[in-house]
Length: 215
Image (cartoon, rainbow, N blue to C red; front, side):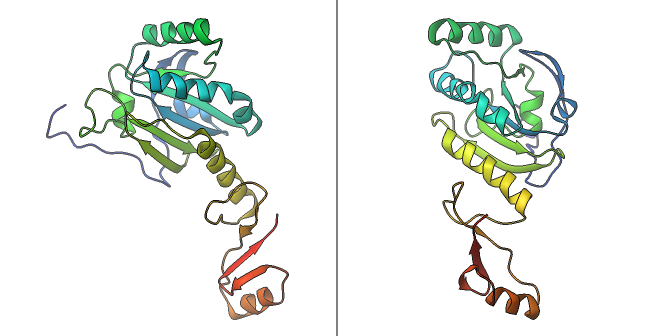
């Protein structure tokens, strides 16, 4: 990679960059494919590697969870489509787990560069373990980055997906370590009248600016 090349990456609140690529399920125009759906776009360093195999298998085993939550999965690595297909077949033969979600072939690294998945201090030829949560409007809502040698936490990925969807549906926020079923945080009052109304409510009041409620 040219040392003078400027590395950029999308930020929370940005529209997800579009791209066209070949995947294990066929050609994909990304924004058209994900239109109107929650999406998790995640990269892995390379096919036929141990940590990546555990992670991709984890996504595959939780496919029903993501389907039930209206969420599409899109994987990616800097490998050819032939390598991807061979790896999918290998994992299916050895473990019985089939990667049904599309895996982007990014051998020219265009998508990895577009999404800042290449971190030169870590590697110039392998994508780090990036996770982008994209809402039905195509906006990036949450980003996670892991190094090459540390696998992701699937429970956390599922937790934050539910948190994002719940926050949007009920216009609330989530406190530290929130899990589904726990109380959520009500937006702070913007007027004295709202403050007084809150003090007369049945919310769990820590103070006027911090109140929780059940959904």
